Image (cartoon, rainbow, N blue to C red; front, side, top):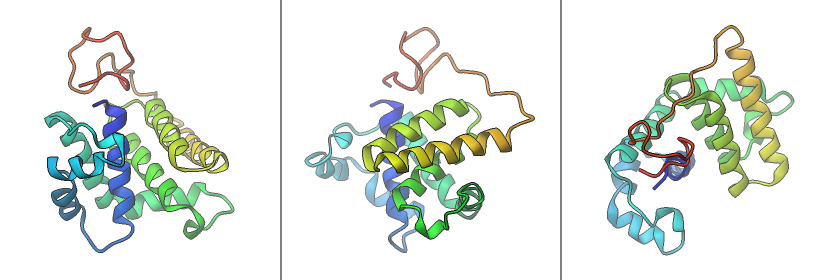
Length: 176
C-alpha cells in the first residue's frame, strides 16, 4: 500500500464521520480491521491490501487529528471559500480539504506541496473538475496566506516507512 492509498482511505473515513454520530475512535475500531478491508475490497480495489503498522498509524493520526481539529479546519475552509457557504461545499471535498489542511498544520514531515497535490488527485476520483479546481484554489490560497512568512518545509527524501535511498520513486509514491 502506498501513502497515497493510506491517505485516500483516511479521507474516506473522515468523509463517513460527517454522516453519523460516531466519534473517530469508534469508527476506526469498526472500519480499520482486516475483515472490514476484505469486505470492502470486493467493491473497491483501494481496500485490497490492509495497511502495515506505519500506514495504519498514519491513517489513525489523520482521522483522529481531523476529528479533533474539525472546527478549526472548517473555519479555514470557510475563510478561504470566498462566496461559498460551508454548507454548499460537497462533503467529500470538505473531507479532502480537512485532511490536507491537517497535514499542512500538524504533520511537519509532509511537504505542503505534497499535501495539496495529493488532495487534488483524490478529489479527481470523487468530484467534477470544477470542484477539483475549487479544492486546489482553496488549499493553495490557504498555504500562501497562512504561511507567507514561513520558509517552505524541506522535501523529504524518504517515503513513509522506508529508509533513505531505498526507493528512487518520489516519497508519495513509495510503497511501504
